Amino acid sequence: MSPTDLLRAQHNALVDLVPIPPVADELAERFAAAGHRLYLVGGSVRDALLGRGVNDLDFTTDAHPQDVLAVLAGWADAVWDTGIAFGTVGARRRGTTVEITTFRADSYDGVTRNPVVAFGESIDDDLVRRDFSVNAMAVELTGPRTFVDPHSGLAALHAGTLDTPATPEESFSDDPLRMLRAARFV
Image (cartoon, rainbow, N blue to C red; front, top):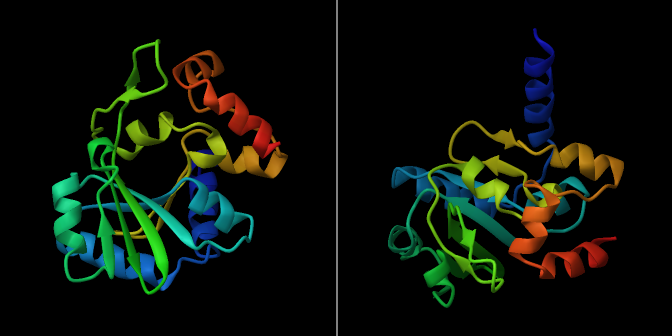
């Protein structure tokens, strides 16, 4: 087994130790039945790895917002689409809040911190746009559970370091508010 294969196997074994709430499994079944992929992503994964309670779940998917609304129909206790222009649909089920965002590959105009939203094609497109590598980890839920960590967020979490998936210059110029988030994390 190559070192890369060993690391991938270790990461995937880690997934078995991450508590995934039943609501996430229910949602994953619905997305899979509709032919879409669903990933638990961002702070939800980071907090689960740190052993913190996770009440608000963040997901990313290849499903576009109208498809997400269709998947949620008849399942969610409440649905809101305030972020739909950015590809995000929110819902609540049995007291758990979920946000589901279509894969994104944002670009910034360099003048404002508001992105020009473009839907991405892959989980990698989505993760590279995130603020920090510790928030750029995901767990695929619709197939065999797979840990996705292309920017070494797990290593950064273990080391207690904060870095960006893209270059810091690109990340912080895209959204200067990320500097304040960095201070809050520290």
